[in-house]
Length: 411
Image (tube, rainbow, N blue to C red):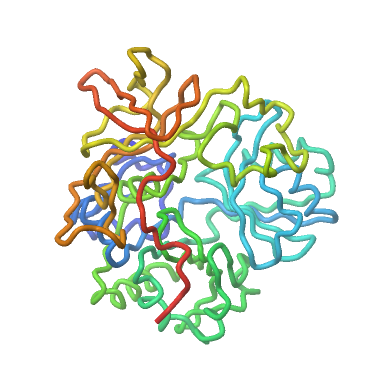
């Protein structure tokens, strides 16, 4: 991300509002987006953990796919086994090339056996569609890139449901039987059965990129600013803040979630903290064949591992070397500060930890991912070294405890 005032960057439907709110605008993948607002990234990060935050993620891309035998086609195209994924349930997976390297990651949304949607990253619609057209059976599939046709707001944090429930028409019906990673409505908004109280049709997805309870709201661009303002007003008493990319980045890293084209990219998607994105059985073998599966060899591939440090200081990613037992073994992929965690008697404790000590006020810990040439077990001590500093860190299986994303919805 770089600061920018360029006029050739793409802009979401909320761009003018971000500028009016004093957002620090940057170039993010060709989109001019707010890095943070006047509140600052730390307060925005903590707002999501303690109450809620509202994000503009209108830079994301939705592509629709239609055609006969579409489920079988996508089950080969995507790493995740979606053979039994029911309409109304979403799944995270990777789109790999023949070398087992990431084209992009995606969320898969099934509507019928012959109609699915993929949510991919900013500007990746044409790339993903071009890749899909090279796969067996592609001549049966019709693709539609919805770039520019949808706005997207993410309401994230433990108070999200309380803030949002009165803004949805027929809320009792909509929120009944609405588990984590499910959705209601339609990306083709005129066909959506879900509407806000003001009549705006939406697709509502119980997903997000923070590890906390929340919703992703897809709606018409011309409706976005009015809905944004209504959500902020409804969340006033819950500490809701508008949040930028910096808080999104630190929250997702603390939730052990990858950033596409940074933590996953042009190397085999194997030996990483996201085995749930692969179709693995209890012995670690693939349960299906998928694009790139033949190239995924855990014996020869590098290892991507999560780490947590001992203070909030950071290093330069893709420049910082990983040192283990005085040997250079890899690079840091992500290094951000999760301001909601700290160490108590050597262990990581979070704001939502049930056993946090009285008066716990964390100063934050650096966390993220490294790519190294060997497997290291949780607890292994590494050092991250760039041109400025060397930081001590610990390989871990998880980072921020007490995350709320899977909690049942409750008033």
